Image 1: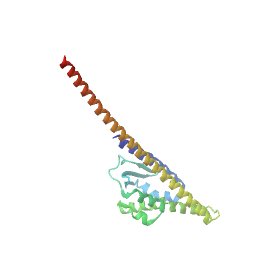
Image 2: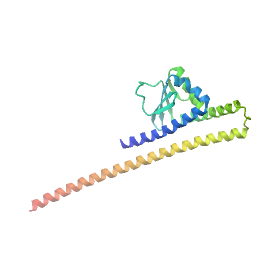
Image 3: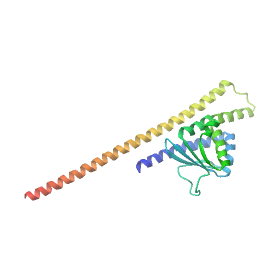
Length: 214
């Protein structure tokens, strides 16, 4: 039970970081807001079932943003779209802005909503963010950025994504360490209980033997 609580707490922390990052991206990227709008309008609920590690996350699209939780909202009986994929597949789809990577994700649900979710995931990709920024720069009448500036921005986004992945990996390692420590404590506690029982039995035998000898 304690180990489950630790894993659940760690997952909630990660979801808070992801939810905050997505809220920031929605504010900065008008194209991403445009992709999220029809999903928010329908209050779409997406169930993301990940493998390695095995977790289940529910994403609710609303006008406030994308709300993430480890359990289904109480007012819903089933999700609109279900995504089954390995964690690396999802990370790859979100960072590459690649149609092929997105299509590899197994999605079940109503055709239109599935397509809207795919469009949102593609716009969430690194390429979609960069394209949105380029369009914004062009639309403002500023000088067209050079190839070196584009490459620098791309490298900066990649560095941020790598940093976020490192943070997630660090949290995962810490969670495993906590699980190992918990197992060790449980083992020591079990050994201590056995030793205590043995000591009590020996004491009882000694007391009985004493009275018999009298």
